[in-house]
Structure formats: C-alpha cells, structure tokens
Length: 81
Image (cartoon, rainbow, N blue to C red; front, side, top):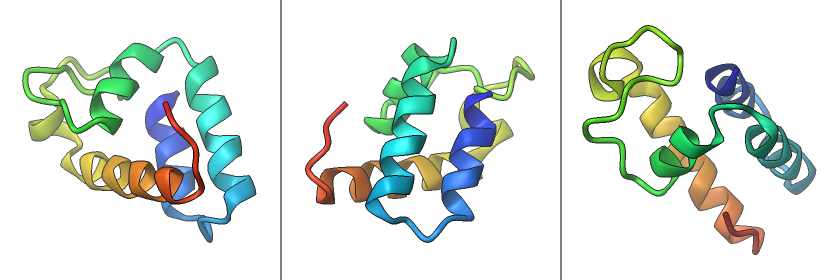
C-alpha cells in the first residue's frame, strides 16, 4: 500500500533512482489520489492512507513528514507530480 511505499522511501538513501521508483509505485497504487494530496501538503480532513479510517494527522502523522521529505527530494531531482 502507499503507506508502505512511503516508509520504504524513509528507509532509503534517497537517490534519484529510489525516488523515481517510489513515485512510479505510488502513482500505480489505488491510493494515488489521496497520496497526491498528502504530497502537496493537503492532508487536513483526509483519512489515513493506511486504511484505518482515522484522519491522517491523528493516525500516521509520521507519514506526513515523510511525504513532505519525499516531495522536497522529488522536486530537487526535477520531478513533478
């Protein structure tokens, strides 16, 4: 799921190939629409991508930080959503 993909980015070295691989996997996931909002920093009122049904900021707030880092790194490599 998308939460696992973001966690794998968190544990990676953040190389361009790893970022591109994560982005491709995220875009292919069924949760892409929700993930895209989170990557853009729009997570208020969104249910967590882990599937718990809880709000993102209450359930997996650590993923919000990871998503921000991912988005920043992705932009540094010239990629866009």
